[in-house]
Image (cartoon, rainbow, N blue to C red; front, side, top):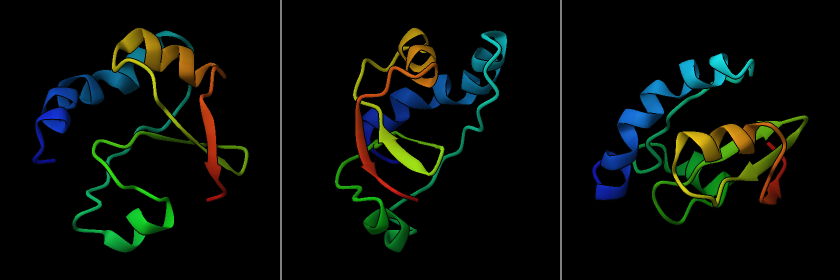
Length: 87
């Protein structure tokens, strides 16, 4: 939550649930401080911030696109970048 990238992403991240709903996507959006919750960060191989993960159908996918509303919507609609592991 303290790095410049995280601070720049914060306003969009707050609006993301509404943006996804407008696109008829029912996706839960959450935020975790992996400095405070180090074990969770290690579990999902978080090594940089912000790391954006999408959990679906028993798999974890990492978002690596542009940090824009349009790219988040495309990603949530199955345009996944790479598999990270299982939750």
